Length: 337
Image (cartoon, rainbow, N blue to C red; front, side):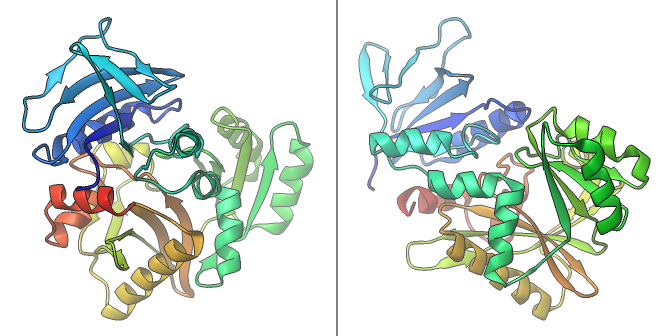
């Protein structure tokens, strides 16, 4: 194997920090401890601390809050148990900034440390829903719903008039740089548009208003296995709520059917579209993409460059359905990214 000491980085500077911790703990527990030393780093608002560590073929040691070793950012190393450990690979599980936004990747690129996710440039583009959608639209491999974009400080009243004249309701109001449906609102009444945009601004200064598309919600993940880009089995999401919001995602108010009950032609279309976008964007690691299958074709929703990785998350379900051992899957990601 190529690496000795793996830093699993979780926590984030966003509303998704708690979910990120759950994902990071799951990933750390599934990395092959007979091959790698595993060091769990909680990183939030510039404070990076070692939460737990497990040397190769050893027991996991945890550090209580208040006595956690600080990570030396100059060397990407930590002094622990009387010795200095330098990390030679980072598995980033930070939902939201700075992991998904490309900032963490930029830091690691400057140090020359390999990592599990897309490059800083690709991460930054994919993280911003508007920028990502503009790029995917140019690939001409999938439909994109009509939309409008506004930045904080612009004339909100004028923008709402533009939306009302150019888009059909209902619309989705989305912060361009947030995940787990934080700040997202489904708007059916034009009178509620301005307040929904203001609410979305609480997450970030850019907001995308997107015309709703009716259809089946499908998601697919892809990764590079060392020789080719591989698409995992599809999942269909059926929610009890108005849409697949935070409550539906994390509180059991949705069904995630894997493999999705679709025709082979649909499965192939979604998988081929996923791998085409993965390759065209220059993605790395495991990346999940969300779509709506409407009567008039397949619509792109968004890219998740650091998808959820809890035991109940979508990608682990896909991996299990594909018959792949999770530990072996993570080794494939580590050794080929």
